[in-house]
Length: 130
Length: 395
Image (cartoon, rainbow over all chains, first blue to last red; front, side, top):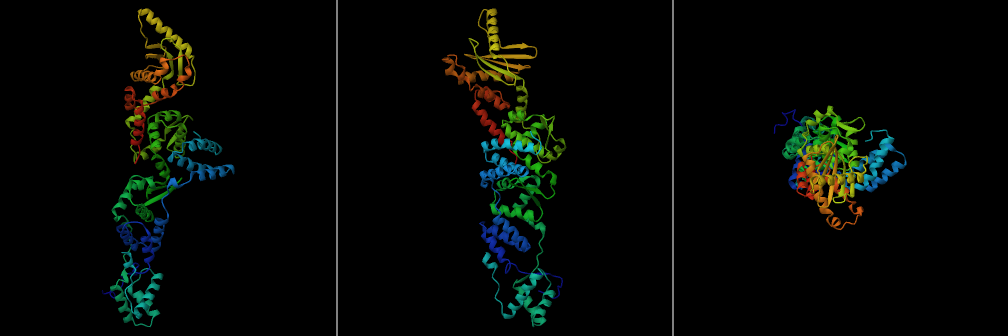
């Protein structure tokens, strides 16, 4: 290799040998097939390290939100607190989440009960009421 | 495969020294020319240039330092399944994470990897709304983010299609779609807040026509036949005023159902109808029945069963379809109360559940649902309703 004559050619330390070990360890933590591990490895080698680590952190830790895991009773308790404290703006935001969740999870009784409060809150906030 | 990646080739003492300097330099500068690196090594060792060059050349041969392969953003889309996700999001903006994941059926971590890469390298945009994470192509207009997401709800989409055809109030939508009123109102609130529909005269709703062209780019806005038929049927059923059920022979009223808010003296009507029927028989000198009476704009359609008589009072003219339904209704009704009719002692409280049967028969229906009723298969109507709802799901 005539490296002394190719003055403009730029080099970098091979991350796969040294600093890539952290990324490699994180990829290995993932419960995916070796084919995907290899694909990830090859891709992350070319991606700036900080960005790779940030993305991997998301893949490992940030599970997609599963609405079934949200405890509706806890949300209702939080809503009651906001309602009692007359924090109407925050209360209606949380109530919209609860109502949406109630629809998705077929909690009909909860929906019917809280929908009336939703209309009341909309009136208080002078928003459109159907 | 991974263990091999961290295997550093064996180095001698001088090479280790140069390698530690290279590592130090790389923390300051992630890429470098060999000249720059040589100069830095020279400053930090007593080695000659020649020796440094020789060691660095060896490092290159052993791939300890490599030619920089500059990251090219377009390579992100080289993975075919990722490209498909990107393409799908571009064509179907406003899809939420779980729905997208369901569509592609990839391992959750692999799917997350693709999404994060697309997001981090600016191909797609993520928006948090309620408990959803929603995705859009990078160029999708921000002002339409929530609007298009809301329209992806199958019930909201069907409300929109109906309102495209006719201004309607929440009660009417509830009847046509067979969705309870509070839920319809919740959907309408969301649609109004998102600027998808408008209040008209504080009672009915219509679509916001300014947004219609935008939605045409992403949704099939042609109303499906089953929904159109239900809308037509709803308009037909708006003529209904009262349904009075009476014992055929005596004319004693057994149940009255009001389709409108105002009331009518059903005893008076049933007595009148019985008298008219007897009058008709008297004229003919044999048993006969009058099936229709018209008065100004009103019509009374009469259908006799074996024991019961149904009188359907309308504001306007009846249709063949309504007549058929009245006929199917009386057959079904008599069958349901068969035992009660045979031994009836005059207690009308046993017909209390008539309301449910009447509301089931005289609610808006598609042609398929109507033909099932005509064939006496009302149970199948509910199955069909569910099937139609599923057909209208938006992918």
